[in-house]
Length: 253
View (cartoon, rainbow, N blue to C red):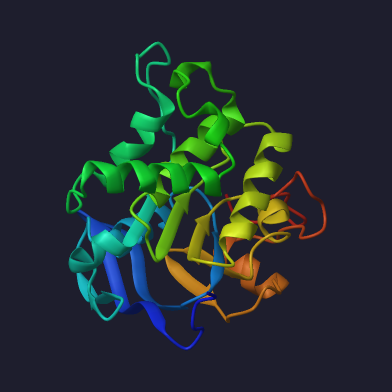
């Protein structure tokens, strides 16, 4: 059953956040509706990961409010799946795919063993990895590993999925496959995808937001030059794929 697009999933109002005296987010207003597939782009250190952590309830805003499914973000964690950036691990560690996916239930209400087995099987089915469920995780390809991490985020049957640069460590072909998988998942679940790759993200998401301390979002997939320049702080070529931050005009150092 498709999500109801009228239901608010995430609502940020006047959110500001700083690490010590360094502002990271300033007066951010952002609403995510059920069924949305939103791509958030912006430069490094622009606040994208911090925004996800606020939605997860891992951080509290200095100003403003964050509501997830109508409640404080911390209280909604059980309904949110998260794929963090730069997931690194010892590939010789003796853990099999099925057990790695099951770890996505940690911190949630512990299901019965048989329910957990079913949940893991469903998550692996959704990412098309049922055939490697009993393989040692270090034997997987880069693309398979990314799908395992997504399955781990899905095993608790979340209503919202947050992904932070999920294809940053894989090649273009694998990245395309992962993005196509997310397009399929977006038919069933609300998704926020953080990336710095304008060309790739614009081909797969439903709407795009630009974030560089301040948020620029109009519930549209169209990126105007003014919108992107406001986010990146300089003119950017929106046409050349593979060059997500190619400067067209001189700008201050």
